[in-house]
Image (cartoon, rainbow over all chains, first blue to last red; front, top):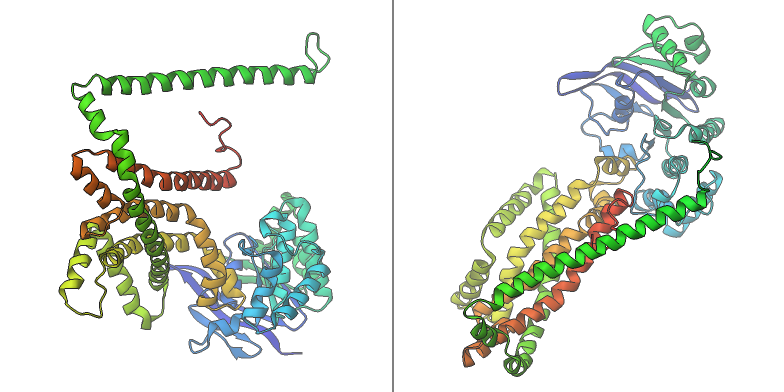
Length: 249
Length: 294
């Protein structure tokens, strides 16, 4: 068994006294995809943000490649440089062109020469069907295109793992497919990823392991066929049946 | 109603019918706007000319010969105002941005800088601008240090810059605070430091957000440069005062007022376009006025 790229050990987090994560354990190994399922407010997003050190955890530890990164002595900026994060609302920089959105971090953070970074950004954008859009500003793109740019932006820094935070939740239904397609391709290329999602069909296809979060704790985990086919916990069963009613499965 | 029901006009006719109704509404709107303008301005004019002192008032404030004879010196003074305005505005923009940045720092070691920023804005915004000009203009020469500036125009400019940079600081700070938190997070997630995030992501958006209030402060400063006249330099207002005192005729002051207007008026129109444009960009075309008189 290869070493975990990301390991979460007993992480707790409370906002103003309200517990959001209650002792979460998780392992993400190289080339693996783990899907986080759970209702809104179950703590999926918070967990991803804690791993990327965008939130400070209360107890427990997060390890990246075996190194404890939640030690107060560790520089959080250096840790974030090793991970790529994609947000629900894209969070592209509206003041920059598509190309500059992608090339910003390679140039400013990783010291890649500008010409080379732009060249690589061009190639990456073209690979994800965004050729010809390089000079536009993000608000001229469709939601699906914007989210693909955001994925390219995260990939351009060659992260150890991608953290995807409900990346299709803000999209119109007909645009969801193009973004999910991109993530399927990435999985096929062996990109390590942790995916918070509401798309059950997608989780079933892509994930090596599914974790069901409920009120800040992982209640059930296992292979997607097992969790979706024969959920053990009543909370998981209820959650899945609600999704089926809503036509999301 | 189905399209082939009896009496229903073809789509083309309905469109023409609506356009005609719209034209009628427009004509009526224009007529009402014109009539009410004539009535209001006419009433104002009637009020003025029927005052007992109207004839004396007219010759004291609107004397063409006085206007012509005083205009060159007022214009010469105004050129000084414009130069002062440009220099002070540049200083104000730089100073305001630096203090705003100082106020948004978080590092513990920079606490004195933050404190200084708060004190600066509170103090210089709290003192009337005319008092600042006065205090600097007479305070610095009183130190009798030959290495300090003594030119009243420079001293007045310093007073103005202190006062206005405190306002502009708050404008910049508001702009920084209105950039959504998610922009910080996206940038930090990419591994950019706080300073890099400010420089490449937050500030460009912040400045764009506050273009209109910044221009508003420009306009205010453009007029307030006249305050340096209390220190004696021969700028537009001062020259107009001198000319007015010679013949006890206030027409030169009207000349100065027209010159200030000539500069602030275009600025105000640009500002209007900017704010309406921004609002229209956010809310579709709701605010793009179809007719200027509405």
